[in-house]
Length: 159
Image (cartoon, rainbow, N blue to C red; front, side, top):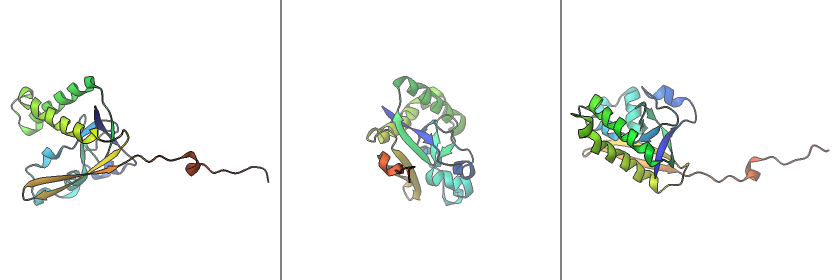
């Protein structure tokens, strides 16, 4: 099974999100956070989180890029439980037991998105508000196979 981990190429996420995700934490889309948002909510760092932030499952912070990688079955249940607890704390779910199914569905959706991609494939998300609600589009950036000759400079120290 595959899921995605937060990845950072620079420190920009520290500046653009209220709470950035930690490098390496498992992530999901997290679009549910914006289900009741309107244009008036889309300002500053909140707008950035809405526009292109993945949701980390440990910090519940946001990240711009995620990388597809394998996840062990034993790692899934703690993620599901943590997300269910998050639904109770921040979204008013009556109990973790009541929220567990939705948490499983959110993680399964992300696993399905990742399943067709090779490890190390990068994903981005772009969201927009529509009359029907939040629309998410995903961009795939495949890993490039660079040959050594493309990176190395060949020469001689003899003149």
